[in-house]
Image (tube, rainbow, N blue to C red; front, side, top):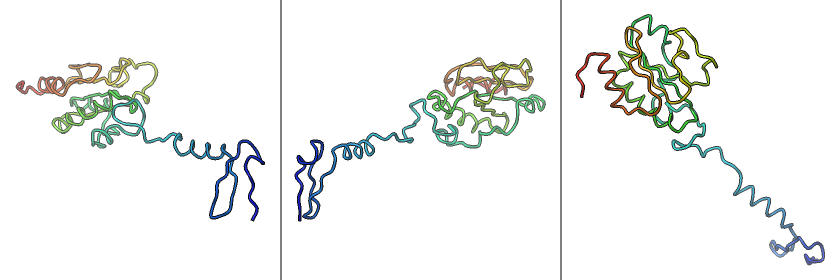
Length: 181
């Protein structure tokens, strides 16, 4: 059995013994292995408190995948004279992720009498439409944006940011003629 002294081969070699036999491994090989194990990026770092994309926010954070895709269009809702709640959002926005739970809770109360239309702004045209039946007409450039349109087609709420449940609920109560809480 012949042993090599690492200093004979290269100054960047170390001696590692395996079951009685000696081998010399490069320090660089070990450093590369360690860097792959500990420094490799992982795609599962997204969460509710960051602006990373991790899927449909209504299914992930609100527990309500029934909102996406919307069941009716705004033009159908206006034609049927049914109130519509437009929610403009992005899947990779922390504020939208938090607001998705509010929208889901609102749907549990008003989902049978109101059309909920969440719209990812990535799907909207760059320039807003002049048509009142086109959702892009109502988008003001920031998310989340909530627009509540009553049965007659009048905008009764147009708010940017995370509107509390009570704020939107008060507008729904006005639309349906319910007493305030």
